[in-house]
Image (tube, rainbow, N blue to C red; front, side, top):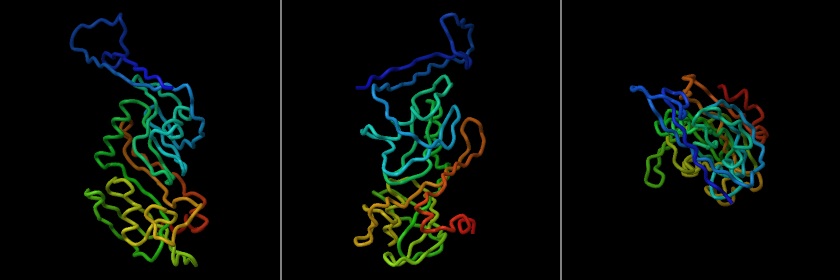
Length: 259
C-alpha cells in the first residue's frame, strides 16, 4: 500500500519563506513542489554507491534487477535506503535519470532533487553525456567501426573499438570491445552488434542460436559517464570497474585498454 504526499514551499530570493516574510516588490518568488512516495514496505537491497553529493548520486547497477518499473524489487525502490537525503529545498526521493537493461551492469546516474533530475534529463536530451561501455562479443571483427542501422524507425549510431581478442573452442573468437553509443535507443548496442554478426556473449534475446551462453549473464557493462556537473560546473567522469567475469576471459584488461 502506497501513499502519495506533496511537499510545497516558497522561496523569496532563494531563501525559504514563511508567513512572516515581507514582500516589498522586485523579489524573485518561486513555488517548489516535490512529490514523495511513502511505502509501508521498504526494499532492503544494499547498493554500491560510487559518488554522492546533494544533487546527484552514481551507483553500481548489479545484473539481474530492473532499474524501475511495476515490480517491487527495483533499483529505484532501493535508492532511498542507500543514499543520504539531500538537504536542498527541492529534495525529493532519489530517481534514476536513465536506464540500463536487466542484465547489464555498471554506472547508473541518479537525481536527488527536482532541479537536478530536470537538469540531468536535459543533459541526456542534449546528448552531452559521454557514455562508454565494454562488451564481450562473438566472432571476428575489425579494429574499429561505426554501426548506423535504424532501430524501430529511428536513427541509431554506435562506435566501437576492438581492445583484445582470444580464441575460444566453443565460440571461435571472443572480443573485448569498447563501445560509445551516440544515440540512446532501447537495446541499441545489443541490436547493433547482433546485426553486425557479432552478438554479445550471453545475450539470449539477440544472440545466435547454438551460441548462447547460459548461466553467466549478459557480458555488457556500463563503464563510465562523463559530463559537466550542472550545478558545480566541474567536469566529472564516473567509472565502474570491469566485473571479474570479464577479467576471467581477458586477464590483461588493464594493460590492453590503454593501447
